[in-house]
Image 1: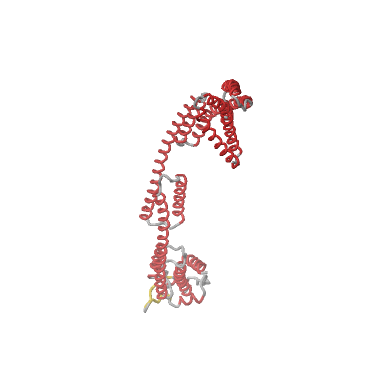
Image 2 (image 1 turned 45 degrees about the vertical axis):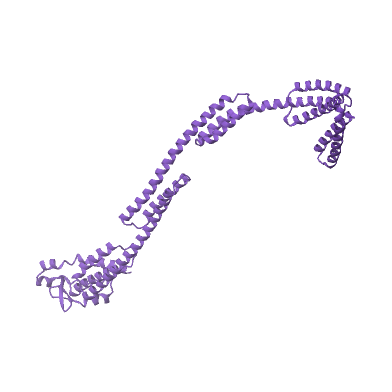
Length: 464
């Protein structure tokens, strides 16, 4: 309501000012008494914006002389404030009283404005300066002492407001500096912790986020002191520069490593292509294993290059290993056929047993020799079956040899001297084998012991 009151009062004052000249102008063109006598009496307009009691209270501090000069009581005397010759004294007093009320309303409005959060120190200073000039010796009618006292009160309130603003600004400034310093310190921590284990992409994202926070802080917070802002920006910029230089150095080193890795892998691919058609399966397999070890040690050449290079290397390796596997499949088939042939020979060899006499041993030896000759011509069998069938054939040979050795010992002049002792040893060994066979639960081991027993029994029969 105070805003509306002042506006209406100021509007009234502006309208009336067109009718009422300044005091100096009135004095310069003052009409003669005869002219005043002929002047039509003005009707005093109804006051707008102020109550009649407010206007009358202000008018009490003034008077109008017969020539239209308006005076205001000030202290123990009075002071001329203007001249309104073409109006009645009531109209003149009303005009200058309303001007007083307008000035008082300005003070009250400014006092209200001081309570606003948006008012600035510069606005306070400029308004005080203007009011000070207007209130020093105002051309108004009213309680000048009260007006000036109110002005002093408002000045005190203005000083307090400026102090409050300054304090709030300092707090806001300190808060803004602390917030911006926190952004700087985060950047400095990132820069200080750069090393071999740094995730450069993630760290770059963090620096980008901090920079965006910096810009947002500049837009949305109080403007801090230029010297402090420049110092903080210098620190933040230095941290970013440290990161950018370190990342650039890392990128250069990474590119060099990738180039070296690419060259090394291209050389490996060239060597792989040279041997991929080799049929020296064992030697070439060993070479491919060495190439794979070198590939792993070569490092990375970059995702796109690595994928392309690996495809080329695998093509060469697959060419060789697929050919080797095909050869193995063919070899396995032949070895299985050889196994069937040798098992048929084993059946013939084992059918020669048992032999008891020297004559049977000689016949068995001749037939076994023929079987062994066929055996050697057949070729390889699967690795897992080789020892099994070789042992079976050797067992046949041992049993025949046992009879042969026994026959030879009979014809040996010294055999009789050793016969008795050897027979005793064989019987003791056979007794021990019987005990072992009785205790053994493993079928394979038990079969081996029984084969050994059968051999020793043949030896015993041969020397009797």
